[in-house]
Amino acid sequence: MCQLSDMFYSAVVTLAGNGEVKQRLVDAYSENLAHLSPEDIPENIRPQFTSLRDALYEVEPMSREDPIQATVRKMSSHQAGVHAATIVEMFGELVRVKSTGDRLRVVSGTQDEPEEEPEIPSYLRA
Image (tube, rainbow, N blue to C red):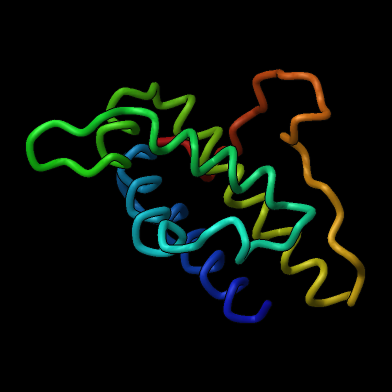
């Protein structure tokens, strides 16, 4: 899990950088998480990761874009911020487990919970 948490850490560092949240999301996911498959992810956060992955591959790319760029281009900044917050939540759970030795718990945003618009942390806003 060490390498996995390092990948999520790198994604979070990218999300905390400068620029618009949409571009930070594209960079964070493309450079650090896009190559992961659901089987690489611990079972309890796998549904959240799969949901994120599916959400970032919804739009058919045009010209020289890749699917992630095309999808995020069509999102609102708020939607991109929600997806960025999902990456931060998954990283937080990985770190919690690594530091405490606890079992992974299901983090918010899974299928069993009611759909509602989460608040975007200020550090992820454009």
